[in-house]
Length: 382
Length: 258
Image (cartoon, rainbow over all chains, first blue to last red; front, top):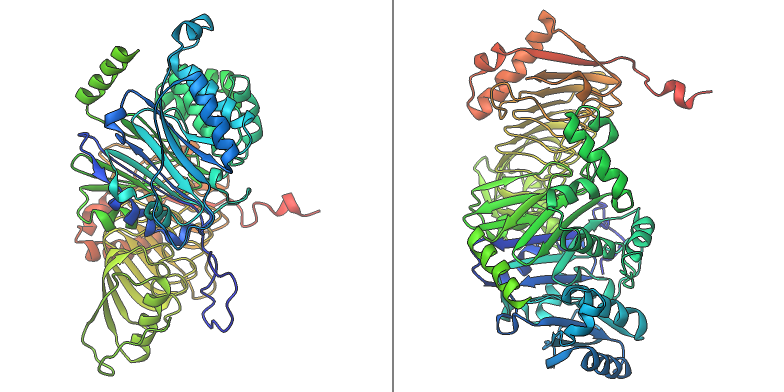
């Protein structure tokens, strides 16, 4: 924690200058790299967090289990773990389970039990009977565990990706979970400064469902409206942090409703009515319709987020950019960060660095070939 | 943690400080010590995000920065001349009182926030809410010159000083994209080169033509800008500028008074 009080400081420079820090990088050629760079970058913004939450999302993480849903689950006690293990065996084909390896780390106190489970959906006829896709089935089961099993929280549930998070500075969380030993082509990271809710392990970022993850700097004042809307589609908010609604909202809009990010950006960060007045008719009509259909998913309040899923990383800020975001490019790598200095530290010779406009999404994607390959593989699996 | 720097006392030679691994407090402590020892030219290399660089320095020292300085660069300075050989982040020149900041790159949000005096020159673009609540009093008149374009809320609640936007990063016939320019403006002046539509301006702003006197004032600052970044000031001055002034000095007087 930052020391809030310190006497005898003639310069008064002991103000707590925390905000939140977010960082993300994707190698669009699909090359995988370890978590060292991203840890160095997020650690450089330590003053933005206060040790009450840090976390990472990694894509391309489990190539040897690429066709399995990888559940990362935290348990507050042994009983919760036993109950969850039984639930998973009843509802899935459980092929492998293990404790997530950790290191003793000075800054990490009183961690919960954290395991990972590699699962396949084996009850196809039953799913089809209920008219659900495999992904829908997994979402429903995650919600069931999080709401019905006391002390168990699924905080990562996608394929070939994973979330690592907890209470501590992000660099301590990285050391604790041995992220230098993992490789991925896309990493996002978060350093937390909790504003409205307590700092607890489940409340750290990223928030995720399936392979969708969100790291966020800001406050979602529309949380109540967003949460109630998402409940109608079966999403249950259990992590006590506003960002959770963003993860479920991107799952609903992008996976289930199949909307592209440009449209989703206009739903989350809808242009002001005064700006609509000066748009061409078709542009204006589209945005008015979006505001009518998805009014309950307008994200109000200051935010900068990095949204990620398989093969794609997206940076987005609120429409009047009340939180910072800088983007940088070097070769195949796209960087997104709260502060440019963090990018420059790990990549001093950027080809380009810029500050995106509010509400304008910045997207990094695996090159088309890989993207096609991924969807092809997806079809094969489906 | 107190860090002591051992150097020969007072010299006009440039002294180089490696900022690598030093946090905000340590770096500013070193700067204070060097200035107290009489150094007048300091070069900082490997700067990566340290904040408030140069804050509370009250002497006309020159500080050259290599790397990317953190937020609130040069906040509250009164005299130093800071040159950034790269980009600046948010809050550069926050409440600065005197001196000069020259940025060979872009600057982030709220550049020149509540600036009260001195000059800032930015070669490229700037972020949101730049020059918010810049102010002037008697002889103190801050000047902020932006070579490129700005994002929304440029000159929001501006109460004094001179804000110049040159639009040099825009393509031919490309408009500035900033909306809400001069929202809440109640003092100072904005000179804008390049096209904007009336709806991009705040309600409190009026558009005027430049007088001869305005042009003389503007030309001096454009020349100073051009000399820092090697532009041709004549070519810049050949294009049309507009002048933005507040419609009233108390736009909210009626709102809160009864």
